[in-house]
Length: 129
Image (cartoon, rainbow, N blue to C red; front, side, top):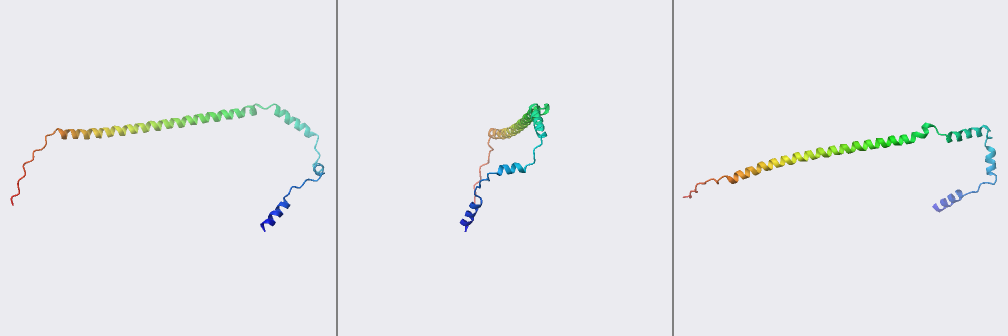
């Protein structure tokens, strides 16, 4: 069944050559071209030959402006990244100093404990039961 459908599609969609007089019939069906169209075409060609100031400089100006915006945005991002890095470094420094202070205090306590003479304990009494 699917073979039949495929064969029918191939037959229906096969290339067909156009009749010999096809171009002539299309050209006759078009409305006649007025003579003023040639003058309009010449004006279009002349206007393209001498571009206006705006059309000559608008594209380079737009490119320069977009380049400037990209540079400024990149600089802004870089400055913000540097500022975040500095803040992170300051925070790490603060935490390190706090840890060193705590360590110093604990070492002082250990040193003092080591310098004290051991407490004298009375001899234990024997259990006389």
